[in-house]
Length: 400
Image 1 (tube, rainbow, N blue to C red):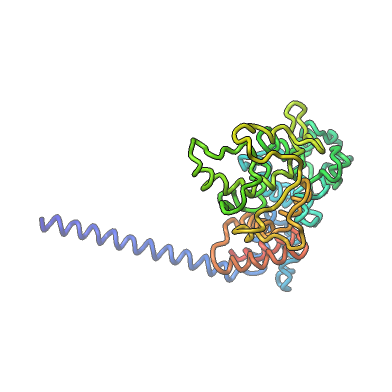
Image 2 (spheres, one colour; image 1 turned 120 degrees about the vertical axis):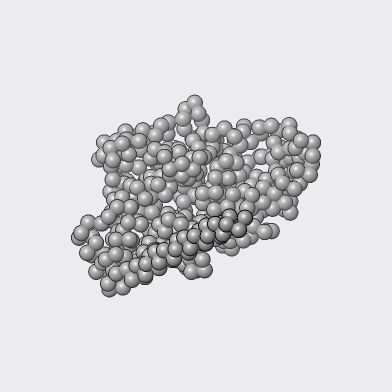
């Protein structure tokens, strides 16, 4: 017994010593990494900025110019130079926007009008708070020999991608109303692109467009804005008031999302994606039949008469989303509702957080990161120039 105890203790001591050696080695490696980051010179910092923004090493000439800029304290100039690399547009920004265009959040989707419009807006410094409201569309230049833009298919953008054409130089800005046939007042930024309509206006009740907008552009899913304390007078007829025969489920769960969501999604009442024609459908003055799906579930519920919307979340706990005091909080149609969301504090904060994650390859982790994000939000709201936000994130993370 004594020998077995001694052997056990000796084995434990060996493990303990091995553990201390591993801890020491880990500490030394971490220390070396921190010292390396802290002592990185202008050349190494330039390379890191370029890698984070373009995803590829810079040419020697570009690296030398970026190094000189950083040596002079002009780090933002160095970041702006890195964004001149075509890979910033063709890879970084494409992968940045692609997950927003499908319900799976996948980056592995073909180039489409939604992605191209995001890339073009960032490239041209179009104020990004108009993403959900502008009459805007980016497509390939006529000189590229692409199939014409079509309301019925994605061939134009598929060919643009298949031919490896450069979005930095090959995209041109136009209006949706001049290409798709939508009236200018019915255009609403990326909401009314063909890709978004195909993903989120198809079938259903048009709540999907709103829910995925909250996830992708407000960084809040419906559970996070759940508020059961508001008046439920605009909840549609398809929502059962006693699911499974238990009204408590409605009052404690369903009502918390639908009270705010249904008055806002009324803005989409005239939109649909027609699977037969493969195109977005707009019926001014006529509410889409989908809004009356399952209307017998609760016949005394709200029956949508038009596309007027109201933001009930301007009261209660969701005031924290930061609604603009210069906007009325109500209106008609998707365009005005897009202005309501696009000018909120949550929208600006969400864009910054997504850029930080894309460039720094991690979430904000500590007080310094959170302060940086706050500063970047303020900077973004000054002009909604997303390239500025990308540059600021790359400069902040260049030593990491």
